[in-house]
Image 1 (cartoon, helix red, strand yellow):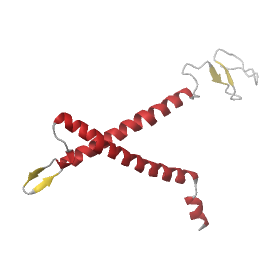
Image 2 (tube, rainbow, N blue to C red):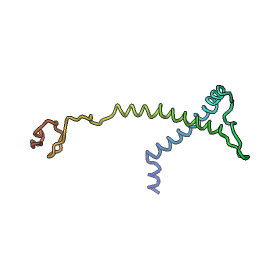
Image 3 (cartoon, rainbow, N blue to C red):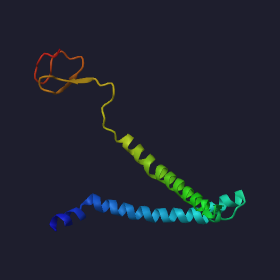
Length: 132
């Protein structure tokens, strides 16, 4: 029981649960935005006032493609918001905080003591070993 409690109270599990709850709430807000504002705006331009009522029938089977259009607009809107509000700022922040050495390095490792020495060095400044 103790291990199960530690599993439940682990930081990353709680963070993930909070993220899922906020994601579901955000999806509901975006769905309402699409259904109540964007779809009527697009429908006013296209001439049809309610996408959810769009359908066609084949052999007594009804296909509600209007609901699919609403869901597709919701998905594209959520994806755009996540990309522009989360992914791009995080990528920009990570690019600024990058600690990788430059591609054209000016140092190499001493084969004897593994310290960093200039590429042009013929002898290690730390262990005085000759470097080929």
